[in-house]
Image (tube, rainbow, N blue to C red; front, side):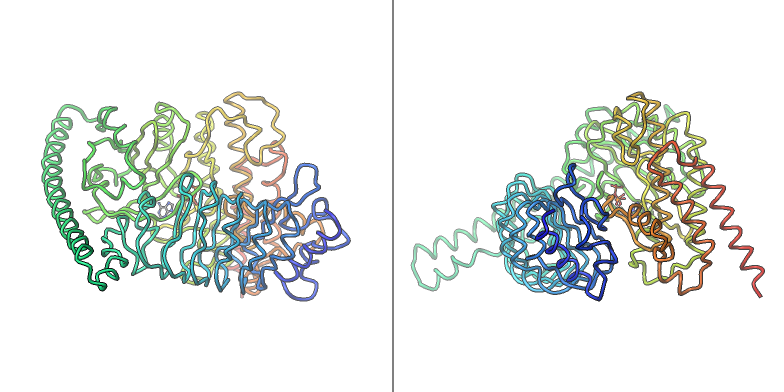
Length: 604
Ligand SMILES: Nc1ncnc2c1ncn2[C@@H]1O[C@H](COP(=O)(O)OP(=O)(O)OP(=O)(O)O)[C@@H](O)[C@H]1O
């Protein structure tokens, strides 16, 4: 980068991490190059000439965002400052970052208005300013045609929802603000969760009709007879519509009940004719596949017939698709591969339903995969309870785990619970053991986890960790060398090579989980290159710097922390074939845990 840009970037970092020498601590030095000298969080284009991404997610920075300095890098496309402690205004100068496509500022303490200039960032695809202290009106985004995601929940925004270009908008959330007025018609595709927590918003997604529009009422005051007629006829039409709506609902409910009785009859017939799990016609499945994203919650109408395939878990015995569809569901989160709903069934059971869209796997391969995973049981692996499969979408049902995930635990959002060294080592050893077992048992079938990360490690009712979503995310027919963390695989495009590389990716991902446990820093969607950072600190022989401060102050054994770090570094070896097998990783990690336990027993 040019000298002026470099100076501006260092200024930006000094404001972000105020304090003497803080910018230099992260490698942001004037005497070095952002692209070639490892400035933490900076990624450049292929020729290492221009800064493209700045990803400083979860660093606990307490400063401000100096958009004026930052935007002197005209090439910046991604800015990720999520989960820090940044304060102050976002600043109109952000509108000068013309190349920005992704702007992630959630989980900070930004205040004031959202800059109007954001609406001029024509290349913007994703904007996340959720969970801040922002107020005022939302700016209009109607010029940003490629906007895919707009997240502004958990702030204090007021006024009406402005105009948006909806054609590409897939994700939208303004819940928990102070917005007022009607939800625009084009937004009815979004669920109530996108708008809830705004007492003065109204419209179809929230199920509360808006009162007649204000301009009519003002005109009424002026007393024109024709206008009064217009107003009153408006009320009459509204009344008739409400009446028709309720009549329609009652008729539908009646029909649904009839259908349910029908289904039960058919089910009984099937049960008597076969022991196998029941499966409805392809037609029925497709009808569900075409239902809206929120079909899981809106089940009153046009009930689909039974299509759920129940696996061997005892919980599956009491599970029926129509109960699942009829039960209230809460959207827990949207990941890269789909959405997750918490569903509370009438019989008191609570399940998690993962909805995956566009997974290019054939139905046959998907079913085979689910049954294989179901056959292999390990106490620290959460088994799927049931699944549904259509061309367009797959649903996976798991037992709901009330105690949250490792991701939440590490990001401190888990009821302020202390997460001490012994518990972290326990998580590491148990997960290593579970993965080693699964890899061993499913090696021949070629089924690795494929999407291992701290949000897929859940705590059960005894606070034991378990791996969730095993085997869900392998993209079929993919060139193995294109998988993340699998550079260096030479075996071409064969299925065997793909399977091998996904096992290797699991080992890398486990290494990252060990790093998260050791550093207390979490990684989401590969955003912040924790592995790169740890490697750079270790190279400079400041190893102790990487460890979570709370582990140091607790007096955790530095020797064993370093040993666990060495295991992690082996797992994240850039060359997949030089990584240890999961079995070797488990042996090393369990030995370390046992050493820790012995040391506690022998302590005076
Ligand atoms: N069985 C479960 N019980 C309770 N919470 C769960 C369960 N499965 C997942 N979760 C939580 O629900 C949230 C959303 O999960 P989901 O798997 O959809 O997203 P993700 O893991 O972040 O992304 P991806 O789509 O890549 O898996 C996460 O916080 C996760 O920890």
